Amino acid sequence: MCCRLNSSIVAEDVEKKREFSMSEYKELDAVTAASETHKVLFENDKMRLLEVKIQPGQKEPLHSHPYKSLTIVQTPSQIKYFDTDGNLIDEETIEGVSWLEPMGPHSTENVGDREFHGYRVELK
Image (spheres, one colour):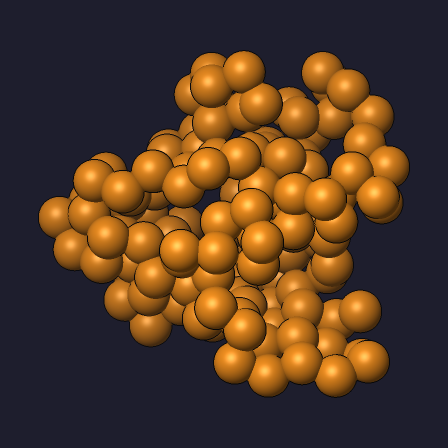
């Protein structure tokens, strides 16, 4: 990825399998479902700032991102995306700055040789 995470692939593939309501998105919100890798640095009624760190070889549990967001990658890495059944959806190097629409349930794995480190500014 040069400047945009291919979230449309993740969202489109997940949505083909099943329609998800906002309550289901929030139930699998990354802050709770993948709390080991997603930390809230700031939150108010308009936005939430997350720090995301995924170690090499680490696979995140199934989670979602219920809000539109701006993602800023500090340390890029090679990431695999999986759907709700564990099938590989995509693999790409995540780097740069990107705008993302809400993402349905998925899991990721850092298959690179360094920590993925980024920030996600979510607009509520």
